Length: 467
Image (cartoon, rainbow, N blue to C red; front, side):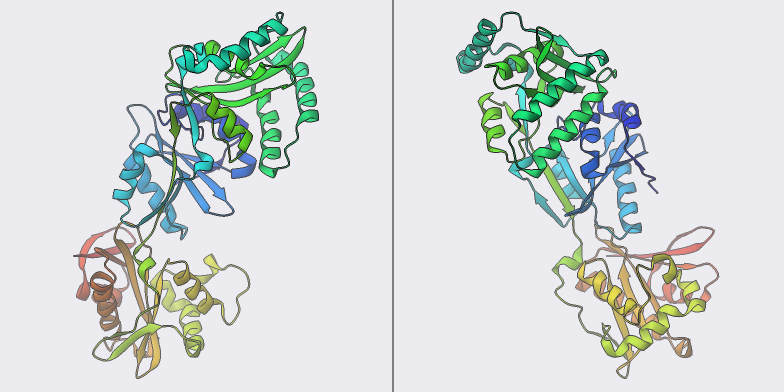
């Protein structure tokens, strides 16, 4: 199971082992972006199968993974995705990827048959050919050259140079002046300014590329970025706009100083800011860094309500209000639940009320995480069948329990077989799994009657049925 730890400033060196050769070209696949926006996305990371796995936390979307980043020649992306799937099943979440490189979209859509895909224009990165920004050559860049020439004419003593940790005081003075002219009211823009100022404290780290335009000891513009694969990713570009031509001069100077031998420069997204979008488009991007959000779905998405199923003696349907007492009895039966591998105390969220278990079952169906069937004999609930642990690749797990006084009459086998038949041929799953403790002979007989053995370990016997 993946073991995540929060991304902190000290994590940068470890992240750079993966990002330094990353070919995805997107700003999210960089140490600087992870550090700069960590208070917003609360990212965590884990390492598995030679890959970096990052988990971000979004108030709107819930847990969002980055696409795994492999070590060159070592990483096994498919195995890392298997670990992500296992984590999602364990935590009752659908595999969701917030920033998928466009070239990996089809692979994920093949892996997960049911998906939703989003490609918001707001978050597309601007990608420029490194040579273009280093030289501004050709008629199409005549406007930028004119601005640079005017800047040089107005401020002939201004120079570009790398920033060092000793420039902390000058950088602070720059920020103070920049804050005085900053006039954006957007909350995200204000956050970005605050985060950028914190990231500038990383100047001097081996992975950081930072520079400034300086005039008589005063900083007129600052930039900070890092190299990931064949791409220079620019995290910070700030200038004092009263110095005409400062921005194109800084863009060209920073590119010339840091992009030699690279193919691309990523100047990140515009987050929907009109002024930023106009500016970034004026530099004529050669491509856009599309950020595909892929969310895996499962077969339950097409199910509007829990169906009613019939077998020779039983009916399976949704657990109702009238079943509350029986359902609570099932869920609170520690002796029998020990054999079902279930202890409500481990998953208890909030107060254990009379409606807790019924509300949880309904919420799981509403979130399309599980289907809980009431098993009815002559109209009365006598047990439960639950379809859960969807793997989002056509598989799920099935479990069944019957009230103790009716055990031994074959009701469990009958209910399990009918639910399995519906899961495979009605819902459309292609693979159904089940398991039981080695000591649970009754469950083993039930599973053997409906499925094929599929291995064992020190704790469980495993079973499977495929169609």
